Image (cartoon, rainbow, N blue to C red):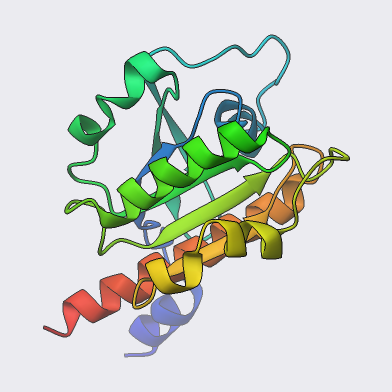
Length: 192
């Protein structure tokens, strides 16, 4: 009996596996999706160009692994976004907070469409107002008001945070908040 007690206390074995969550990452071309994800994976951000089609990155965090399917934001690709939504457990929407009014309106339209899409409407959303390091960047409060997030996202799980590739710690914190929403959704699903 002493041996079993010793073994239980001292030889814990492998730590439990981290949960994995499948996310879809969308936003217009130039919003910074690839740069943010590359920085989160400690990859170089030199020579990054617009994503053609999609790419998948496994982004490790201490308490979870996020399998992020990043979809290109060009007009020729956006029309196919919905084909890649199936199986997603959460959504990351990246917008350029320093973009022109015209581009911001296009981002607003795309976000509204995503928030109302049948395969995404019940999922947690992380909305990143990127390029906060630029002088023309709009604040998260301005984005929240312009995008009409309060009435549109009422009853949904969502987070709106400012971001910049120069402040990757804040981006990591935003993703950690998203993981908490994903864990909460997992626990709610388990209670059914």
